[in-house]
Image (cartoon, rainbow, N blue to C red):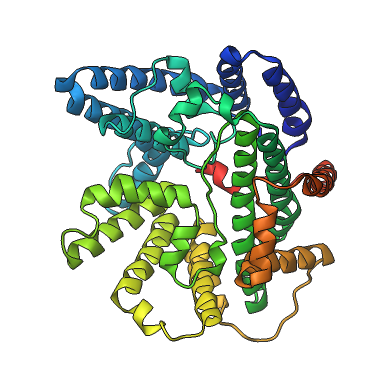
Length: 470
């Protein structure tokens, strides 16, 4: 079940919100947990019991770790093995065996017999949140939750279960226990506005761009021209941004409706003037997680220049492989890591006096080329499309007016905040508090977006979420 579906919007969410808001405060967590279990079971019922068993085990490991000083390190290690072991098995076992069998076949040896392992939806996201719980308790950043159902709710809460944002345990622990202070009409209205905006970004922009991108990438190589390759790369850059940021907006909006304040996940990443800045603006909760739970424990920048670059390389290797078990994701991570290191070595100094718009354009070009590795499962296909970017023979591409319009809007909205007017417009749009007269206008705008999105959904069968497969 996905947020941008008529089933979710008009059945699941509608019924859930009515029941949830009629439920006494002391039982709201139970209602939300049951709804979250139903939400996950709808898409992956066979994995639900494995997920629950691992979470129950992890809860008691962490609780034992927090109560007995001599078991702290043992508990930490056991929890890490449990969580990372499940992630490694379900997400990377197929990749490892396939590559091992490829090596064996080249050596004329018998391949390893293997049955393909299915990938649980959202395993990367709930694994990182489970690790956050363990590490925050181990570091004594926050005490563990007293009740199992509260811990299960933290991990399985359906607004952010499948694709984030990654919510740190210490930032939400108190609200899980009691969030009545967030139960205000302003928060609920803002949640509705934010959800409507995210839905529109996903349905009216990302889906329309994505349908055309899929058609481009389905073409035989001999039919791919330089024009098609450039439009496909450009459109995919905006598809993945509006798809994922749209999901994040919807998750944040649902959080506000339920009394939670989830962290922001995007901050106009395509206006970045360097790849380093891009990673401070793109998927911010992942970047912050990797910094605090991997980069700093490795030593960060405290052990000399060479060690700093090594740590950055490790972080972006992990970042790449976290996104998917494939060489294309590994290359994508290396690509970004090389530019992050180059920023520190010489790029930032070299481009320091370059006009701002040129730096933005250069960064966007680097990121867009990286997305080609992300989009193509086969490394050879990615190299082919990157080569085609530099084929400047004039050819026509048959584009629909709908696609062209949404691509232009995507470009406009992505770079709007480069201007003072655009920044003010965004601040107004995302304001959590506003005067009463603005509520009337914003409410009407949100309803228009909801109706338009619902109308498009009812007429279209194309509705994936890119990050659901991670």
